[in-house]
Amino acid sequence: MKFINPETKTFKVFSALQEGKALTASQASKLGVKNLSAEVSRIRSHGFAVYTNSRTAGNGVQVTEYVLGKPSRKLVAAGYRALALGI
Image (cartoon, rainbow, N blue to C red; front, top):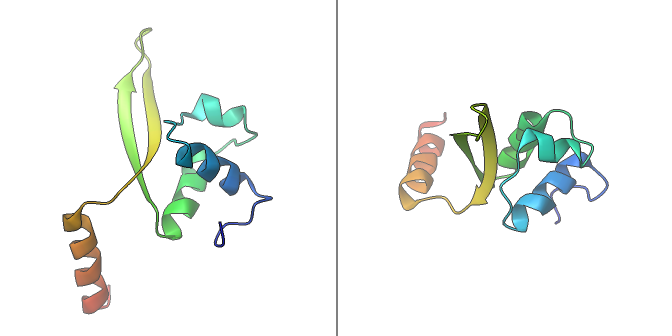
């Protein structure tokens, strides 16, 4: 990956997401990442579509999963509109 330094935690998270895994905070902690949402924010700032899914685990705990995906045409169009407006 030319945008993300391969020696960073961000790259570890990006690699896991690129393999098609849904990543949770507990899984990220095994990679040495303490603040998964910050790493996901960095990946998003590089232009990648990372989606957030919330679910309830079997024990009733709310879990947030992150998944790398392909942005919809509608989302891309909204981005271009925002750029055109200077937002």
